[in-house]
Length: 385
Image 1 (cartoon, rainbow, N blue to C red):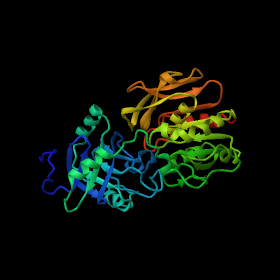
Image 2: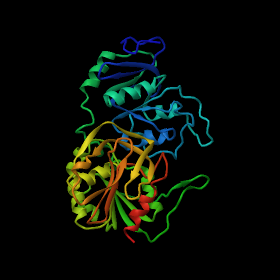
Image 3: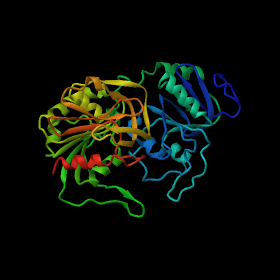
Image 4: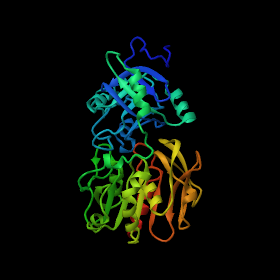
């Protein structure tokens, strides 16, 4: 086995991950050639790698997959959460094999290449996960060169020069630049995507990096959905005469996005109309009511995170993707905690006592993941009668 800290590529190595701390991890490159700098995080989901790679919340991040067989079901045009991938790269244990699934239309390697995303296989992803758990999510450069030529010294300098996600507003980079309507419902095998009926309540969804399956779930419970940019003004939002407002997931530091997002949310709260937030939207609501957010040591990413519902003690198995969290100790008196993580006790949801507004830190749309929390979309719909 080659020395992972050697700056010289071992024979046959075509991929490398260079951490800002100096560790050098060699492997086999796949997907696009080139290099990218970002934060390395780990995801524990056993399914849904294509949805993960296309989730806008992963902008600026390189994903270390703990499940070893990534790419085994190929890719298709339906299992995507945005029009383009947003994760910078993928680190996997096993070589990407030929797909074995009747829905596959393209090899994962070819899909990564076509979308300009870099992958490395042959990495001890368990060791990488342990490193992140101990030292926190590192900044790194991921690179793929078919010739095996790498300037490791320059990559190390690039990894150290990158500012990191803290203080970075990425919602502006991944949001829509045009307002649009969404009318696609949930997907079913053999039927495709559902078509909604008419005569529905109107919801405006603020796109901080929204996943398609969130929009599908909003349609499924009876909403006429209009999507607006992360930088949309309150006046623009209210011009659509919505019955409710949805705050989406998204990447980056919530405090940075909150500079322009929080004043808009505070104005909405004055209307006393229903509001529902997910992930970054949860953090935005927290900031809007006076709470603070903080960067987590390793974050929560995967499709198997247990969350306790405080109202009845039930445990929901949830899908998560976040590296920042609302500091529960800073929530105001009118914000009642509704959910907590059973991994570390961090806040995973709250609701306001004096108006119809609530949010959760996890992903009830579950794409990929369990469906224990779909009832939250119905709760939002029920607020509008």
